[in-house]
Length: 287
Image (cartoon, rainbow, N blue to C red; front, side, top):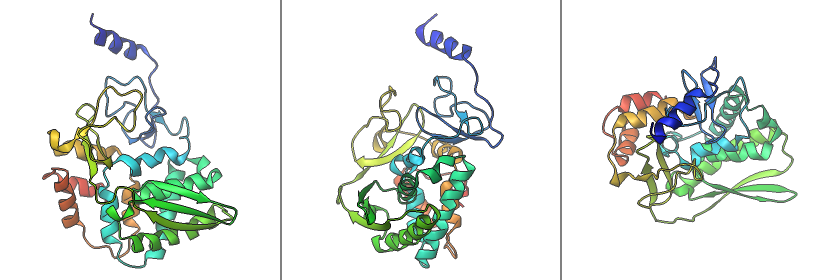
């Protein structure tokens, strides 16, 4: 018996996970969140020692885990949002913040309202796709968005977030004023787009490199995502990632009143990812 078969046998002998009535799961190790029919890792099926955890059995940890959506996943939903939010920015921001809190309630993040600063930070990162620093004193908290101009018109997202923060400050009972500012770190340099041939996930973050360490499992994963120009893949891999990722961006997009059709914008974004098929399936996960 070879080593891989021994590992496989050991994994099969371990206790099985429990089914989630809502199909809502999370992983305590890689901090991914999934919509699944059964508690089996959809990316490393047959290899991962962990089982996804039903949210009904164990509530997810701090909303910090959700930040990975904004920090590392493809910025396609955020760029679509930046193109379809064209007016009523403050009210749209309020709706987006409410949608986020509703989402955390559905996914059993009961701790979200006990960690107001963390929850606000996570909301900003998930919505904008930007790394965010905080400058805090007794009177105010300023969230500094990094390289927001690569995704958004800064004036627009500032007004959107001002509406969001006014709502969150009231609901989460935050005493300080909440402000938004910006800083450019990468400048004109290209952001990296990556694909992992082993787990089939797509990532977008940091400066472009030929390969990177997995941003979700930096200490444990044995495989290196490579820049998309170096690898071949099919559109069904991206479809799968969209389909099993929780629907937070679909909720965000639904908050935009009188939104224009984003078929053309999505087609352009998918071409950047070398995707020329299954556009309708991907669009269906976002609207």
